[in-house]
Length: 479
Image (cartoon, rainbow, N blue to C red; front, side, top):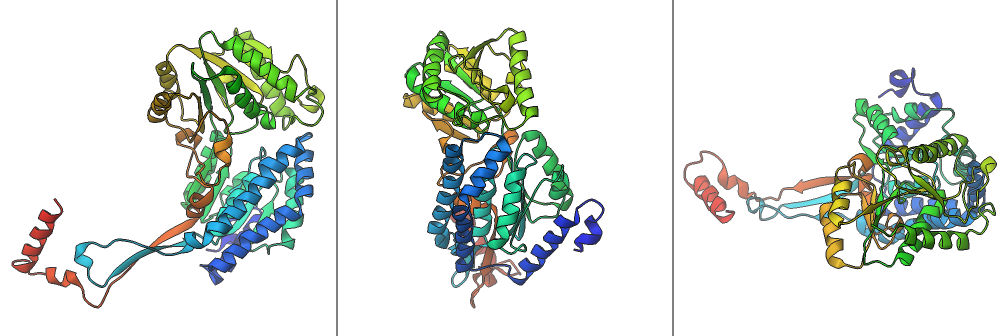
């Protein structure tokens, strides 16, 4: 395919030239061996480890105030652990796998699969965890033997520029290239005929990405969001529930796709939860402006959150400051956490993913009400149940659908390399992390090799006689 003639009118040369170079490089080595793949993952690990301070500083500059401890733990450490886990298991993932044969294919035939790189992949990165959400799919793509182009978010300009400067010291551009958004170039990036396109972002943008990929029949993995509920059961201690829920809600100021987006409490338990939550928040964040609490990413998002809370209040909700009355710092977009008591479906806060420190609270009398409510809405990226009742846990697992589940915990499941991460329906398609990520960026190629003797020759026409007797025997045997 001549990329310049087919896409020149709509794709910036910076994208199309790099894509053509990566295609050409892939054509020279379509299936790198285990040693080459391992070396690529180790090089990603080196890039992160040797430039951690610069990357943390760049993310902080993009946010205005991004807690450096959170960046190091949730992004740098996550990537390092993911790379090391992949290196540990990569040899077994790359081995051919024997498959069973039908009786008619005995005695000397063999069947197996082996994972082969898909080729050149595109990765579109959001702004909320831009290091982790760039490098975690990159680890999987390189483990699978691919080449990659990565487009950063418009809200990650400092990080994008840092990665554009740093990466050539570790990889040739025909192996890995980072790009800034450059003023809304996302749609043109996703129109490139990648061999696989990986996108993390909102459901609305995910639909546009899928539409851009469709003319090229580019396979897509969409890691989206949605309204992820948490449910506290009557048997679970309220202090423990508030402790774990508020840890998640305050992390990155609630700007997490798997965060608790609304909370179901047993009827009559709102005041108890608010009391515990306020005590926890004020103890952990005695000063919201001291650098431990992250700012809202930009003014547009800050104003959206302010409009969301005011809409809820105008429609009858009660807003409760959970930070002991602290007002944060509007000039720096530091926004205090608030409970939205009495939220309902007419309010903006219940109509779209919040992505901020607002926590709508609903109440229920029976768990079936909660299950019906969740089931009547788009599938969430996560579901959190706080209960020690194993039978109740089973009812929620059996009667709801979500991308992932946390029982007596929030968010943690999204960071485990041993568990696949991915949504369902409105919250996404496809999955990655660990082996599932390796398989996402691989073509699991099936191979059948016939032996010198072929049992199938005994069933050639004319079919009367032995072929018929053999087929009748097999049909009875398999019934």
